[in-house]
Length: 277
Image (tube, rainbow, N blue to C red; front, side, top):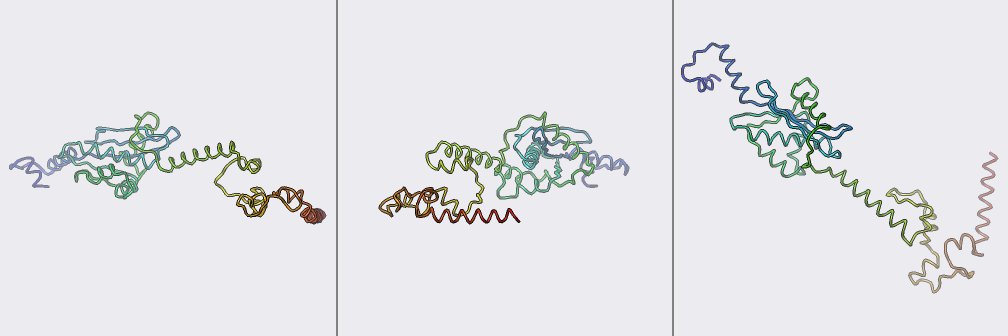
């Protein structure tokens, strides 16, 4: 420190100890710019900001309003990215220290999946630009101001469109559009109308139908009307003379009607017994 002060003041360094510390403090404050960055998401939207404290004075602040579908993490990365750009344009003899209250935002640029341009700007920043973690809501004046500015930016910040929408949101939009197109095709299609009357709405969730239900309602089973499509039987007629569909075997066929009535009788008897219990 003595050598640095002599270099500044010249060879005749004869000031008192208290003056030396005052001068050193002044030199350091003029060379060191503290910046705090933050991101916020409220009911009003998503905001990102950073502010600069130099010589105890708020020298600069930057705020932006992101897309409502951006995440808080994206807002924090945006604020950190813009803070690095701002600090890199300061005079080269200035040392800048950027405080960030989210460790993940500091570590993100080292991730291989991180956006290439932001990653390049962050990793190639000059050595005079330092980025450090700061505990959130610990009473730090810079962090508290950045937090408040980020909340204000959700309503009054300048629109910022350089941050891409998050992938989960894009996937959600594509899924919604796919379901809408599927629903239109299902509603206006010529096939599967019998099942449409039972299940009018499409869904990616599996139904709790048993195998027999699927075979009956889809009519894709051991029925002449279905197997005839593959030229397996010579005819799509049942032995009784009717068209061999699933509905025919369940309600009309004389060969299955007796078995159907016996099963129905057993079912009615079982339900009556449970009713008496």
